Image (cartoon, rainbow, N blue to C red; front, side, top):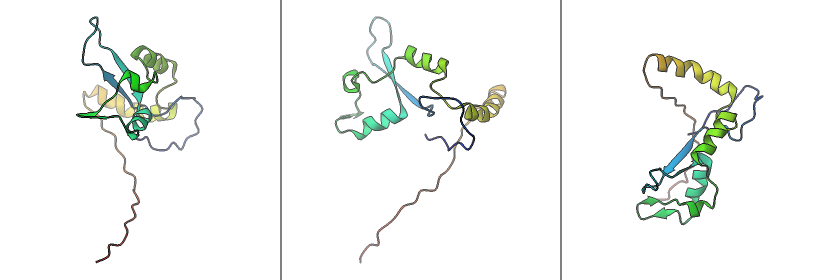
Length: 126
């Protein structure tokens, strides 16, 4: 979930150019509403790197553990509508043609790119 580097000059501002966010929903419904919060991919990576987030069944996140550093759905929608969150205009324009074509043909789009990963291996002694 990484966007490739942009070669065009950027003229529009974003809090984050990474459009990947995760929505977490509480299991228990309170007052007929689903309580949820959203966090960015970068924030999730930071949380996963901290000891103590691993529970018995995997990762355990709570409102208390996030200490108020999360977004509600209405906050996120406001940031998107205002243009503070999402891809830059140059990226959006490049993707729009692909997305429009897929939407008109009722088809799905999967975008992927590959980067070479340099790994160093130490010689094993026999």
